Length: 280
Length: 337
Image (cartoon, rainbow over all chains, first blue to last red; front, side, top):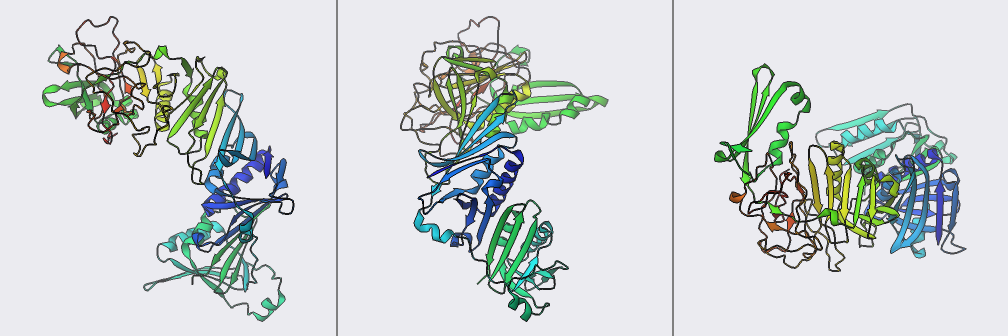
């Protein structure tokens, strides 16, 4: 198993750092999947994450100037690593004005992802800082649980409003209830509702627009005003929203009534999918 | 410090929390205060700070003190094999890049290289910290003498504190050390003051254990009981020598409690004779310390920061002048400040 990659472009480095920061906010521990074309950050719906799953994908070509990998075997040409997300984002943060950044898989006492940053120090000689991030290699037999989640046929698909607005609304709602209802219809309306014995609070977002659904049947039989709703844990929604530091290029929310809500974001060239299941 | 015109030594400790607020507003002090008078009132166990301000305003602060027994640390730093001097800024910038929250930092030197490392954790799981490392060229140092290829590990938090202090003083930081286990001395020398911070380093002793306690205690290990303070242990090769001394004018006090890790290598302690016999005059040499008394615990800690008194000639008296005021103290003492 081998992996070495290098980033020399500052913009690419910052982009990768931003993604890493976001992942660190979304998942404490995550799986990094390295394949010849892509890098994926994966969180699968274990009990530990409360059923939330995440799939983040980036094309390695767009970030790395050099990229070499050799997977477990020729047929299974991928590497699955488990790491603490914050370790990676903090290591990348030290590379803010770096000349170059190299990442490679190493085994010094224990398996590591070694991030090596070449900085211009104040005395104008370049300084190399290396960080060894401890990782765990995930064995082949567990790979099946870490595949790309299938996008369910959603009842409603709608574009999200400004995530910052959503976040501030949900943050306030969190103080009132643990339980939030997210509902949307094909008329570009999305509501966030909480309900307690004393009070109900609803925030209405209008004129959001709906992406065209691929399955014709679903959209035809559905009345545009009908709301599809899911009851979810408010903290999970808040964690998702808190992780979004940058305005996405595209943000779609897919709702399967009473089952799951699926957020599909595109951040320039990086795709992020986040699934929050309904509260049972 | 004089009390009733009798010059005497004042060995006492004041709580940092009491002193800091007095000198907090630098702007105000610079603009309004015309004179500051600091007087000790031994009869009332107080140090009185008086600010004579504009418009006839007089602010008085009474701070209670407790007696303390300074211990002398005899450690000749100039005998260390490795002596480095660097502008603190460079180290500070580098420290920022060490990502781990580990408590310890390691200096690793060879004649051609200086390497700063965050200490490697022993555990092998994901939650163990990132291990970071960065190298410095000897050219970046103002002075670089490496007589011994070595690696020393000591408390990170203390290093950060010392660095920020030396940056504020705009003084280059000198680092003296030898083999692991022997203390490292970080010192700064200025017209106004000389500060020496003696920090214990982890020795290569295989039975070392990591510190269970929190912030003030950074390095500890299973120790054999150190000798009672009355006798003096000899440190490594250093002869009984006077640590350099200087009179401090404004002396911010800080406490760096340390554990001696290997008593034979650790800083030597020697209890100065009782205070009453100390005759040399020392203007405010107030040192903070902690309760001393080794107790049954195997851990001993030293305050590592001391401001000594410089005198042009050595005192001839029976007791040593108050050169180094390093205090051995018990663990667990909450140093308020």
